[in-house]
Image (tube, rainbow, N blue to C red; front, side, top):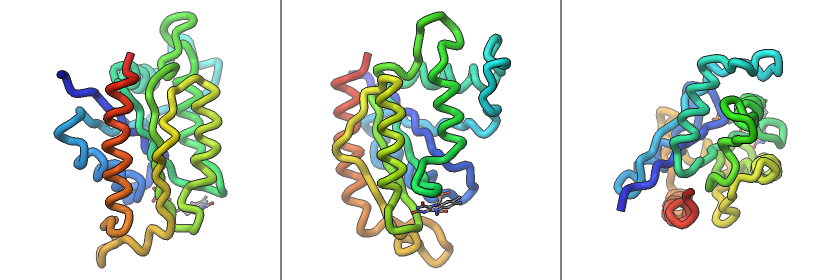
Length: 187
Ligand code: FNR
C-alpha cells in the first residue's frame, strides 16, 4: 500500500519554534509509515478579497501543497488563549475556492492538532478555538487523541532545544492514531 502524505502546518513563524521542533519530531516518528512535509507559508500575504483573483503565487503554492496531501497535521502555539494570527490568515486563504468555483481544498481533509506552549494551558484553549474553525470549514478532525504540552521549558536541553521527555509517549500515541485515521479517511 502506498504511504499516505501528511502535511504539517506550524502556526509559529519563529525560527526556534517549539511547535516546529515538535512537528519535526512527529515526522521522524512516522517516517516509515507516511510521507511527511512541513508547509512553508511565511510569504503568504495578509488576506484581502481584492487579491483573490488571481491569487498571489505564494497562495497558489500552499493551495497545491494542501491539495496534494492526504492529511493535515496542525501544530499550534497559543497566543493569548487563541491560535496565532498567521495560522488564521493561512486558513482564511485556504478556505476560499481560489481555483475552481465551489471547490474547497480543506473540506473533508483528515486533520490532527497538537501544540506546545511555555504556559500552563499547553495550547488547550487555542486548540479548542482551532477545532471550532476547522470543523466549520468541514475538515474531518481527529478529536482524540489530541496532544497538549504545557511548560515547554521543562522539556528543553541545555541549548534550549526541545528534548521531549515526559511527552514523548503521547506524541508517539497520537502519531500512530493519526496515520491510521488518515489511511481510513483519505479521499
Ligand atoms: C504567548 N505565550 C502563551 N503561552 C500560553 O501557554 N498561553 C498563552 O495564552 C500565551 N500567550 C502568548 C501571547 C503571545 C503574543 C506570545 C508571543 C506568547 C507563550 C508561548 O507559549 C511561547 O512564546 C511559545 O514558545 C510559542 O510557541 P513557539 O513559537 O515556540 O512554537
